[in-house]
Image 1 (tube, rainbow, N blue to C red):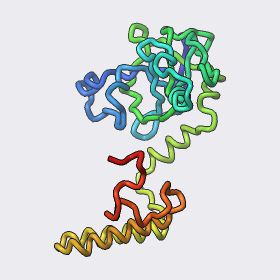
Image 2 (image 1 turned 90 degrees about the vertical axis):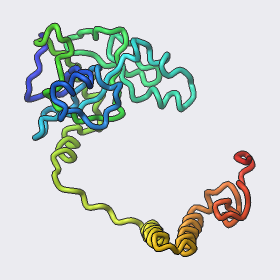
Image 3 (image 1 turned 90 degrees about the horizontal axis):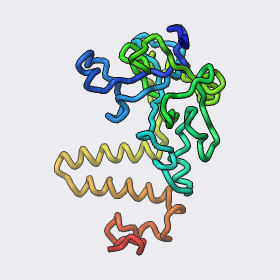
Length: 246
């Protein structure tokens, strides 16, 4: 048995049940922000403990239907490499084809599937009590990444700090002030909305065009055509870029 105490849950692999099962048991504990295909998969806990709501932060795991990552994301273009980059293989899965990364389990234990990947792109808060042992037939058997692998995977990311600062905060954040040009455009949009509601369409259109013109003044040097005033947005010419013409 590979032990893992409740005082340090980090690096532990658990099983996230299917959504229907969670709904039947405790619908109020359905995690937010998860796609439907994330359920019925293992997850990797990346925080040492739980917050006051009993949640841990997890990374999602996948086997790509027991396929190599190159079968899921083939190609050699930069976009192909970017698609593959967040996924960390766990031995005995082959090393990552681009980064060479390879995670290992504690005590040199191999993962039970030929292909297993941890998606490091985003973490999610999930109630620990809805997570099940990775292997239901042996609830005492805990699967854990070794210390070196977990350290490499989480390098530069303090999940415990994020866990404390974002989930435990009960008050709302004070929004940052908008830059003046953006603030003016926002105010112009509000005035346009009020004018439109009052039935004065021309005034609303005037505010809208003013906001657009100010916007294009700011980005004019990025535009592919020389004269932003000829932009089709103002109804003076057709699409100025022939590649996107009719």
